[in-house]
Length: 445
Image 1 (cartoon, rainbow, N blue to C red):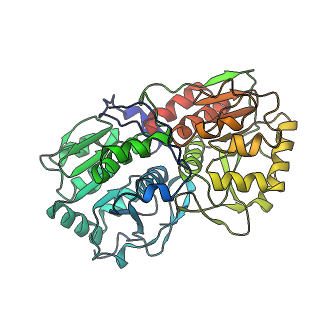
Image 2: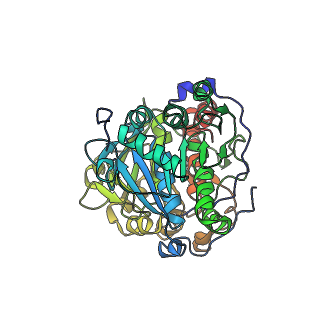
Image 3: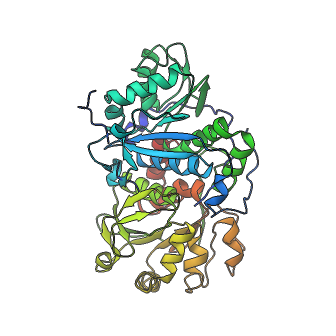
């Protein structure tokens, strides 16, 4: 779904959003040719612990992906359901596990769908994105699995274009209430569904949602369906989901300066094993929608990175190669393991120091302001925010409550649930408020 479709967006009402919490890559297989209440935000003290999410009885979840899948939707679904304790299988419907998702984001699936067609899942979740949604629709093995899932009374869920293109086309929405990406609402109604403008809609064993900006609410809702409300609240607390979803995003700015660039902003996004995949993908996704030139650089000797929730992302280059160029912005995702790797990289720290000394923009989210910027003197004389559990490591905590904070050439933010706002604030600094609002509308932030 491209930003140019934003003009067709409808006003939306909210489905009882659960207040979620943030935690800290993915090539994806079934080709189209194959035979075919908002609660108060909580602070979970186990923020960065994978084992803490495994206490509930295991439920099996299938998330199919394809070339052209919307990566932020897929990654948030994977991440949040794994936080909830689900055994999530990411299955490529292509002929290989590596997939080229939208916006040039490369991911690696766990398996091929063709290898698991006889498996039984408690939930099948379909991400959106084009042409990925069309590929899922045309994948006959997936269609058969979803129809059997429905017949057996187990959960199916879809977001963005997938409710209309897949579930609707397969005849599963007849007489059901469902929602989807705004420009697909007429197509949704044509499938004999009752099209509603909820951010998340539940009708029996089918759950649907609208787009990238509703994916966390959607995913937490499905954690609740599988594991109960208590687990959903536990998972949602560290996510830092927006308390006012759908409202115009806001940015707190101090010591305003212009962020300049020549023809196109050149932006470096480093990633490492343990980086928070939702944050990394959200930043890359939004900035590439804005037509910035985003270079994703992996620390270490491999382009493939295993992120915090075991999503496999593939970088464009190694940091050794990226170091040869200059950038209008260097921005770090969070995730405990990733932030620790950044802080230990002399090469990256030197690049950041040179960026700051040149008064060029640099930024970080989640654990990275506290674990990377603070110990290396990159917050000296600056106001910053960070992941709530990390804010005690900041020497100046006077502005930590802000979801996104700009101080001159520095931008910081809090966690997974603020990552889209963080990226939109970067867009605004380079392109202006109107462009930021356009992308916010297109992504349903």
